[in-house]
Length: 99
Image (cartoon, rainbow, N blue to C red; front, side):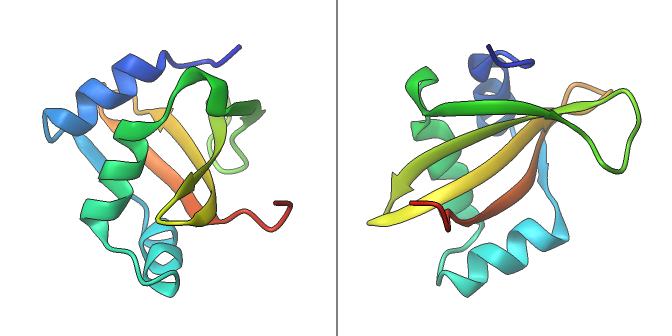
């Protein structure tokens, strides 16, 4: 079960209350994807794509929800969380090497 309701994350994306970490943006660019693709991918996620929840390695007390899906024909691994101010955060967005 995810820590953050997926619909809450999507609401943040739709409302422009989100940020994409520098590393997630760079990893998306390595896949020839841009910010719009990252947003679109997250908005297409479904509960069935949920993989696991893990503790944040940088911020004690925060968790990150991992989703695995396919986007533009690519296997994607993305970590999402909600920030303390209610914004959606894309922590990681990269090729799923386990697929």
